Image 1 (cartoon, one colour):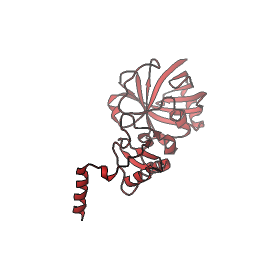
Image 2: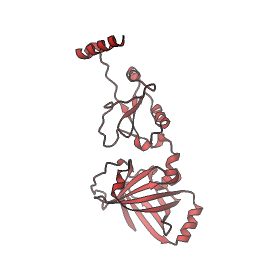
Image 3: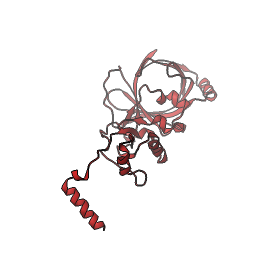
Image 4: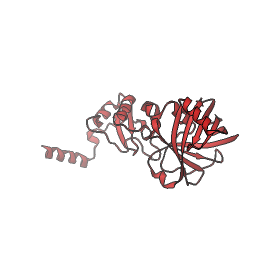
Length: 264
C-alpha cells in the first residue's frame, strides 16, 4: 500500500509545454467508483502494461492506493466489457516542488486539461505556475472516475462554472467593463441596481463580459458564445453608485456640453 498525496488544478493555455520532458498514452476503465468509498480501475499504459488499482480517499489531498500488475490480455478484455472509460496523454514536467504531470484528455473529455503535482506531505509548499487556473483538489466532479461517468463535453456550464474573481487577476468588480452592444447596457445595469442583485460573467482575461440581474442569463450568455466553463468566473457585483449630475467635476460637464454641440 502507498499513500498518494497530490493537488490538482484546471489548466489554461499552452505555456506548460515548455517544461515537458516525457509523455505516455493512458487508458483507464472504472469497475466501481464512489466519492465517499472505493474506486476500482484498470490502467493500460501504451498498450504494453496494465494494472488493477484500488483507491480510497482519506481527505482532499491524500489517497490510500493499492496497485497490482495484471496480464495485458486480461486488461484488454475488461476494457471491452466496461462502459466508464477515459483516455488521455500524460506529460511529465520538469518543475520544482514536486512531481508535476499534465493530463490532456481525449474523446468526450476533450479539450479538458488537468495538472497534478505529487507531494511529499500535505504541507509541502509549492509555487503555482501561471497556467494553473483553479485548484480542484478533492472535488469529485473533476476526478478521472467522475469524468469517465459524466464526460466534460456532456456537462452543462451550470455545473462547472465557478464563483469568484479569476485566480491571479486581482480584479475587483467593474475594474474593467466590456458589455457587447445590444445585449445589455450600462444604463440598464444602473437603473436596475436598486431593485435587483447584479451578476457579472468574467472571461479568462479578467474582462467583465456580461452583466445582468439573473445568474441564468449570464450562464446562457456563456453558452451562446461558447465560452469554456474553466475560463469563466461568475460573481455578484456591488450596487453601482448613483451620482447626481450636479456632483460631476466641472470639466466633465463642459466636455459633455461640447460633445452635445458637436453632435448637433
